[in-house]
Image (cartoon, rainbow, N blue to C red; front, side, top):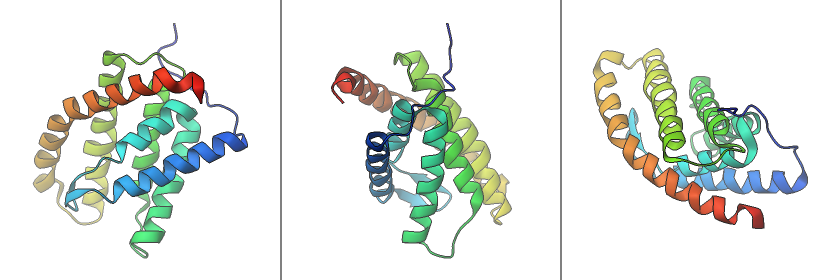
Length: 172
């Protein structure tokens, strides 16, 4: 039994339209974030999870990277740091590896969300903020605590969303 998926569907017109809708959803949900620049909470992870679920790791990663760059061009021109784009792509890739073509379970959802929070949010984003001049010693613990608190919340919300999507997927 294959635990992770490394495949993506063919890029058809229909898939491109769905991907564009999820990218727009991610941009809109990302605008509802709150917190400090180094400690943000945002519902945009819903769109990232759905991109991974529907489009697999490679297309989801490409869409997340493109979406990150589009968001920067639209909302904060001139303030571009490619590390955050890498983090967005890795998060989408991880979700795609865990969910594309796989049955959604609580354990799979917990592992996927946990890996994204650890690798993308805690390790990489803290590294990028450190490279940009924020001392990591001052932000690592608040960021870690925030992500530990968010783990069960994001897991529950992600599991509920994906189970609902799993029921309607044959109709799309």
